[in-house]
Length: 242
Image (cartoon, rainbow, N blue to C red; front, side, top):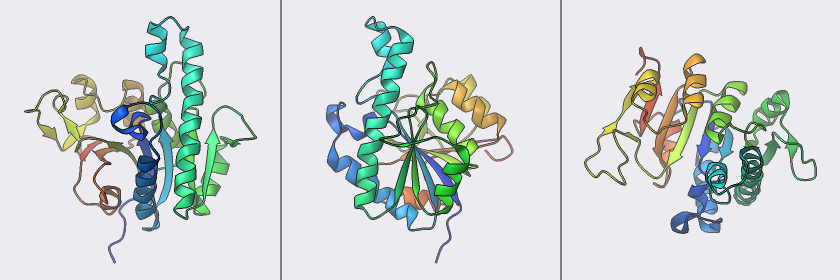
């Protein structure tokens, strides 16, 4: 049996990915599909942390443009990630996998507060850990939260699930002849302003030598292939590994 190349991963999903074509709200069929992908990786004995955004419910930056003060808007966005986390937790547990939600903002009736040692213990006990409410601070995105939590739990890699096959030279949904970039250095992403993760997240990963793998989450079985080491998606790492 092929062994996974990653023992512990941090999976980053966008809130919009839960909505499907309508781009708002939560599509139960998509959360079910994601839960099956997570189960397939979990069945490889991979320890899994998840960070999910909240853009399908509320997006702080666009709210600021509409006149909502930025800190208030970001707090609303953090709460939106908790709603998505509960939805994903429900689907994963229906797939037969134990989970825990850990939030950066205390809400004890809903989830546990984020404590690093507790998160590590849950992972070691074979639970999927969903990290919600971002970093708990305004002005930081869920990309940055994903990088931070991945570093804190000693993940082997940040795996970002998207609707496309990896990182492209331009938005493939807008530019049909955009080229896929299979391997990159962190500085390539920063200097070329590639829309992988925000620059704070990229810098955190660079400073901690944490690779980022971007792949198409919509293709069934892809997450399992990624953790097994198949050459899927695009890998951002240090220059010697890129």
